[in-house]
Amino acid sequence: MSHHELYCDVCEDVAPFEAPPCVDGHGSDCPELVCTGCGAAVVIATYTVGVTRLADRRRRQPAHRHAA
Image 1: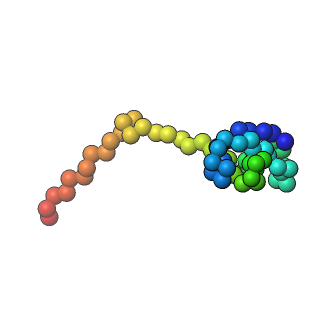
Image 2 (image 1 turned 90 degrees about the vertical axis):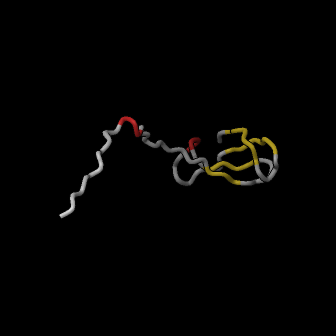
Image 3 (image 1 turned 30 degrees about the vertical axis):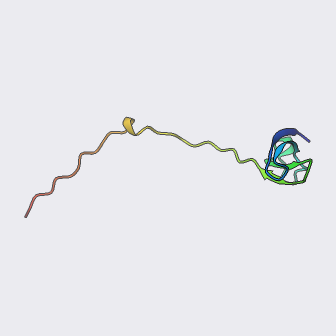
C-alpha cells in the first residue's frame, strides 16, 4: 500500500491516506485513497486536457450578406 499525506475534510487536518487493496488491478497507483484516521475515501482523478490558444487559430471573417 502506498501512503500519502492529504487534507481530510472530515478530520479537518492533514492526515495520512493509503491506497486500499485494489480489485481493479491498479496496484499502488490506485486512484482510490482512504484516510487512516477516519476512513473517509477520496478518488484522485488525473487526466490531461489539450490546450489551444485562440490567438493561434485563423480567425474567420464574418460572411457579408447582400440584399436580394
